[in-house]
Image 1 (cartoon, rainbow, N blue to C red):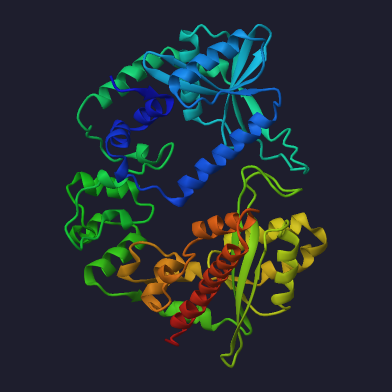
Image 2: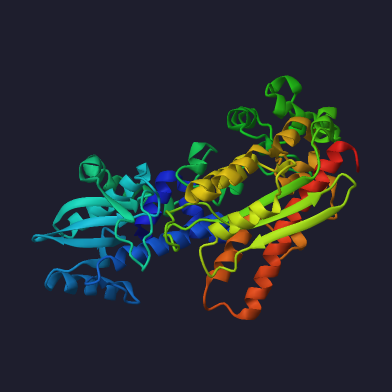
Length: 484
C-alpha cells in the first residue's frame, strides 16, 4: 500500500488526479513564486509559534522510526510542549504542530499562516485528531492557530498575540469519523491508474493546482486557448463541454460578454483593436506628467515595529516625469533594507511629485491604497499624500476599454500590453522581471548574510525593473495618443 500523509489525503480530497500526479509525476508541476513564498511564510510562522513556548521540545530525528520513538519517549516524561510530535495509524503519518499540556492530556494546535480558519483546515484537523485517537493520545481540545491581523509588532522579537487560537473541537467532531473513508479513497487513487477528472472549481480550491495544464485539452500548434477569456469560467466550461478548445473555432453568437467578443474578434482576424477614445482621454492630461509605480513586500510575521501581518509595505518607487516639450526625466527610491522604509518612502515620494500635474499609474487601486495606508500611519504626511491621490489618473481602464492586441492573450497587464506596443522594452532580459521576483530580491537584500557584491546586483536589478514599469507607461500613453 502506498504511504499516506495528511497532505496527501487533503490533495485527494481536492482532486484525486492531483494526488496521483503529485506522487507519480511531480516533475509536471508548475510551481509559481506565490506558492513558494506561501510555503516560506508557513515555515516562518511555525518557527514563531514554537518560540512562544521556550520550554518546548522539537521532535526532529532524521528517520520516521526515530521520530515515532522519540515522540513516545517524550510523552512518557513530565509534560511539556511538544513540536512536530509524530504519530502513525493505518499507514497515515502525521506531525502535530503544537501539543500543549492540559492537565493530564494535551491541547493540539495546528499552526496556519492564513488570517482565518478555512474549511480545509477543519479537514486537516480531523485527520490529525483521528490519528491521535488511534494512538490513544488524550486530547482536551483541538485548535487552529492562525494569524491575527490586528496584531501590531512591538519589537524585540515579541510575537505574543500574533497567533489567534480557535477551538474547532466541535466543528470537526463529525468529520473525524469520515477519515477512514478518506484514507481508503486516497489509497485507491494511488493504487490505481491516473484518474480522469473534469476541470472545475476544485482546480483552484483551496489552492491553485500546479498540474492544471495536464487537464486541459491538448491544443494544436498555434491554437488560442479558451482560457484567455477573463472571468469566463462559466462560458469556458460550456464551450469545453461542446468539444471546443481553440477560441477561433467559437461562433460569435456563442459569446455575449463585450470584452470576450473583442478578444474573439481580434483573435479571429489577427488584428489589433484600438478606439480613438483612448487617445482622447490621454491627450486631455496636463503637464508635467508623473508616471508612477510602487513595489511592496508582505510579511506574515512582521519585522518592523508598528507594522501588522500581511500589510503591503512599500519599499520602492519609480517615476518618469514628462514635460510639455517632450523632455523626460526619471527619479526613484529604493530602501536599502536596513530599517522600516515607509516614512522615507513617503517623504521622498512627496518631494518628487511636486504640487501639480497628473500622476499616471497602471491600476490606481494599488498605488492609492498604499498611499492611504501611509497617510494613516503618518498623519503629518496625510495632507500631502491625499493631495497626491487626488491627482492620480489610471491608465489601466483606458487600455481595458479601448485597446486589445491578439498577442495579449486575454491580459491587460502592463507586461502583456507593452510587447504589442514597444517590443524592444523586453522584461525577459532583466534580472528582476516581475513583481514576485522583486519581492524575492528585496527579501535577499534584507538578509544580513547577503554579500555586498550580491546586494549591489540585487539593487541594480530592482532599480532597472521598476524603471522599466514606468517607462512602459510612458510608451503606452504615447501610443494611445498616436505618437508612435
